[in-house]
Length: 367
Ligand SMILES: C[S@@+](CC[C@H](N)C(=O)[O-])C[C@H]1O[C@@H](n2cnc3c(N)ncnc32)[C@H](O)[C@@H]1O
Image (cartoon, rainbow, N blue to C red; front, side):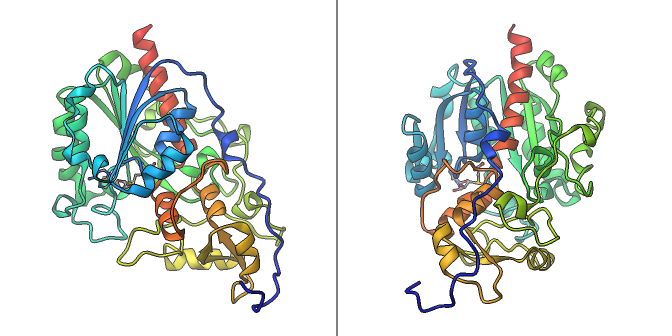
């Protein structure tokens, strides 16, 4: 960094993917959303771009609060102690919220952890359910890792999520895959969506892919559940999802691919500045000639601090883009903290499509 290391070998990259183009701002339609477990704001930003009026965000992490406040100074944000959802009596929000959304911590279910489910003290699904039942919004959206749909958690999903909510809500669940929405990363997430009225639930259509990835290998899983609801267009009719080198604006090396799933800097036993998630991911990063460790604070530092193997070093801005955050959305905190918020997030364009689909179903009933 003082100029004593090897001379830079890569130009400062100029990305060619603009995540904001994947989620054009929709006019505000008057539906109001409340965010729990807001983190760096993936769901919040998606709902915002889909025209929802933000009511408030809650997260226990002070840096998450700073990220949200810095990007949307007019939002009501509760962070740190004030953002601890276990301490909130939600009844004061009755009648003031149309949709509640949230991604409770995924560590209790993630294959990267011990998968203790309910026995993990970080399990917060019951808090999400409590908020929904106390506020009684028109609809809710909960998001998590796909491991939650594994056999191991069958009874958890039934007992902790579906049973208490299905007394008041009509539920559906589906898996979405990030590249199907133009995000150049292998990433799948499960969504639980519930509607207060039968009419909304019947009209509800989960988001359909807006993009395709050339290899076609990542298609399919988002049609795993509710297959009958999808009538996907032929891939050839959809725009192509970029590979990660192309999206980052890196020179053509004759190989490109989707980025492996990026990990959060806050999961695992130690905080980390690496986005590497597995051994197979390492192989893909190598073929891509991208160095997934020691992510730099910005593009200039990534350029100056040459990786040992000469591969392209990522910056926070690059990782945010890989997760679907526009460059204008600033993530607060030191590198591992920013990577924690990025890696934990629902890619905003994915959140946007879910928000849009929920809004359409609600409007059908209201109108
Ligand atoms: C998976 S992340 C959510 C990411 C977010 N949905 C997004 O799209 O960016 C889970 C979040 O839950 C927060 N959290 C954990 N325990 C909490 C609690 N008791 N109260 C409020 N937030 C909590 C964590 O700080 C973390 O930011």
